[in-house]
Amino acid sequence: MEDIPQPRALPLLGNLPDIDPINPVRSFEHLATKYGPIFKLKFRGKDTNRKYEANIQRMKGIAQDVITQRRMNPSDKRDC
Image (cartoon, rainbow, N blue to C red; front, side, top):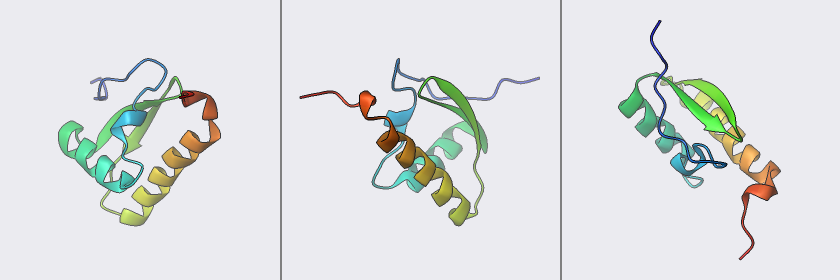
């Protein structure tokens, strides 16, 4: 069985930097173009599989989940 492709994940942040908070749908489109319709992302230390579909409404829901995860974990933000 083939491994599911994944962009390189950073320690602690995982693949959060790969998702543009302004236009997350575009980020998923870019990742699907590079890694194929099914790819793996890491958020908060957990692997998640994503299936990119042309259905924009579904992608908006996934993107909103990512944004919500960012907001729910303020410990990922550094104090300036």
